[in-house]
Image (cartoon, rainbow, N blue to C red; front, side):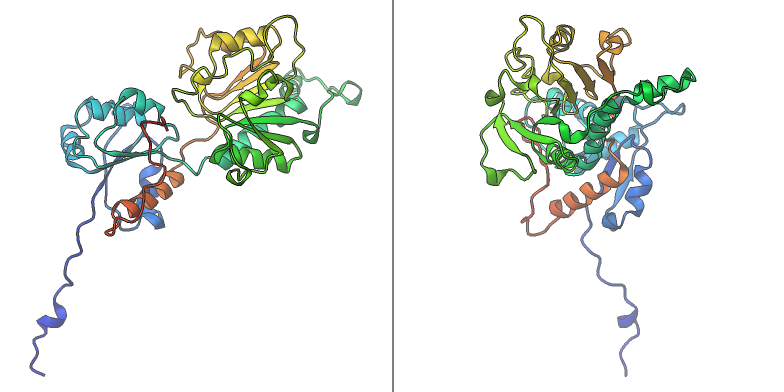
Length: 361
């Protein structure tokens, strides 16, 4: 009865402070999603301004001085590889322990930071497969059904009619070789197989059937398909940029050689990285008919210069690296999962998709 009310009204003991995530990103809508996403509840964020008063992206050297100081003291940073590389060069990541990239590829950062840094780097992965599968299947259907021609017909007010209809092939008549059977390649294989295509998975090394999760008709190494790549209706590259993959497809033997005329029907789709095949080799292969067409969402140089010959090549279709964008919800989910692992008191959880400087991804 004589107990003081203060015992009941005292605030609970403070919880151990959680590390702040410093967000340095130009992704539209990311702040709103991070602040409201259920999985990010309880994560403290510090958002840093990345745009000038005209809406242009800032470089790290132009950040507000207070932001530079706060980021430099932070242990967790979330941002695009371009920003991460710039901050590293300015010495702003010396206290960082974990950096979460908003891109799938790690090649940009590895080129800028050639040696393993003092922090763990994780890339955004495990989320792009479905969207990139839609892109690949959409491009195949558009090409097979001649959608570009119908768009031109509409502009010309031309009714082609059944008597002048374009012939087309059904997808269950077609074959596709998918180079790289990771998360994204497996999703592409699943989508193509569901539509009846014959799907062959291709990799750089031998793999047991138990290692292959994708529903492929067969799996083989690049050496095993040497000289036969151009016998597939479509060849889709999903391989990342590493020391082992750069210019890997710039080998005429893989495509059957350059000698003589070729009547290849093979269309090359690249959603991996642009440097797996050299531009000069690709244009030459297209010009001699070794490769029938190319659909390129990734290029050796991005943005593609206005005077680049790929823009006007009749057998090339270029899209500006948009087969799958880093959507705010994707970033939020990946960050929340890794934040839980990073702050786990037992240290028994690993960061997902941590980049290895040795392998290059």
